Length: 80
Image (cartoon, rainbow, N blue to C red; front, side, top):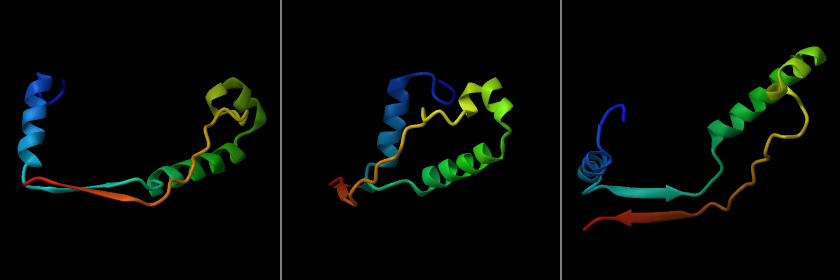
């Protein structure tokens, strides 16, 4: 609702943008996500244990989901 007030208007705008486009859908592991998880793990190692108890979201209790590596596949969608 920030840019377009109506979902139908949003759909129409995106449809016009990609009308003659070739879209590649890649089902691979995200490098940005992997880097962010590694950086968060480094920060967790630097935190004192009392801070982890104060902020449960920063604890190393194993609540963080592990990322599975997907096989590299590409689906190509073209409009005619």
